[in-house]
Length: 58
Image (cartoon, rainbow, N blue to C red; front, side, top):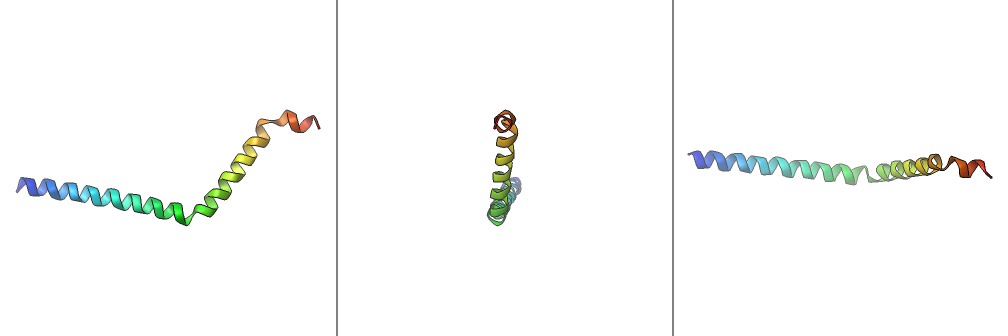
């Protein structure tokens, strides 16, 4: 009886981890275009703010 309870708990844990991984991948695939745009704009703003001297010397 005790072994069966332990096995059910382990199975439930595996199912929860699998569901979380599936949800994470779904969000990554669903929002990929928006995440790429945000990353590009963030990189652009970081590069322009890190070199303010180069833009003021022109």
